[in-house]
Image (cartoon, rainbow, N blue to C red; front, side, top):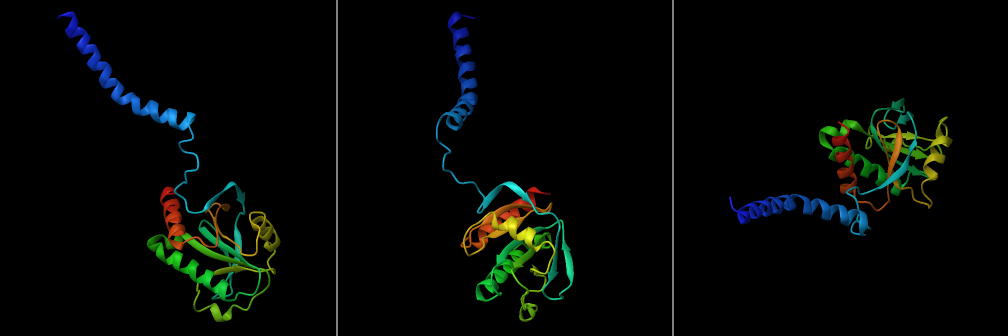
Length: 194
């Protein structure tokens, strides 16, 4: 084997090796030494709450039966209503119901909760929003929950919150968030938690 053939073989081997290492080195450099990823948005449509806030097990009432129930081991969509449940509240209840139904076979892994500042007369809603849960100021854990949620936002309109199956408040969505985005997030979370 001549010297030029040896060098040619070495150069070929080095060239093949570089094909594998150049993308890795380039990615490493871009991530750690440039602002390449700065300002890029993640795949989630809401805002992750960091650190997560421990809520624990929630006791609530079901609108349709007025029975007290424990919401446990489920993803929970939550919002707070400062006034009587009027038009904007009903829109949110409708939105929650539709989000849950859109999850198809995973809908049983998601529950819906509204936190009301006083006992509301929800009888007219019980047929439309069967399965909807609520907490009002007659509940022992009402003030605890209100404090936890109000620490996370300022303003008159409550964002939508998401509690994970372990009782941690971990995500919030501004009022104007598209339901499709919330559905995608919940689908991804359910899939990754299996």
